[in-house]
Length: 160
Image (tube, rainbow, N blue to C red):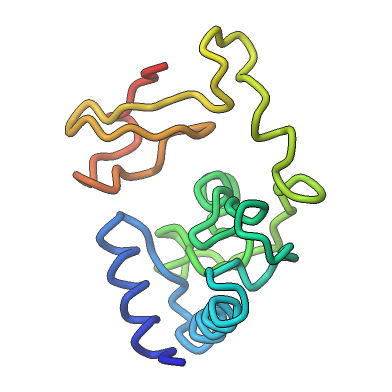
């Protein structure tokens, strides 16, 4: 297990995507170790802070970075396991706090296939388009920063 190398890769990828890893390096490396253990056991980096089924298709929503990272960052300033944090936590202006589990009991199940209310497209999430580079993503809200061009959230428009 290359904890240091994986930590550096995740940190670089996070920063390139406009995200921050938790500044507590020791804590963060413990999370990285959990991710690597899950990758060895399961073949994928399931969140080390959640129960997983061991079936990739059932765990897609909790493969790091999980589907719940951005909503958790938006609402609480950190993701569920606190691997990713917002700028306030990064600067030490606030501490990560406990975050309630967003994942439906037993995994995403039917919730992932239900259409967005008021949507005629049948999609389970709205689709957002970055007006700067055209990047598309399907999620409840657009990301804080575009992972391609680093444009802020307010540069996104609802596409579908």
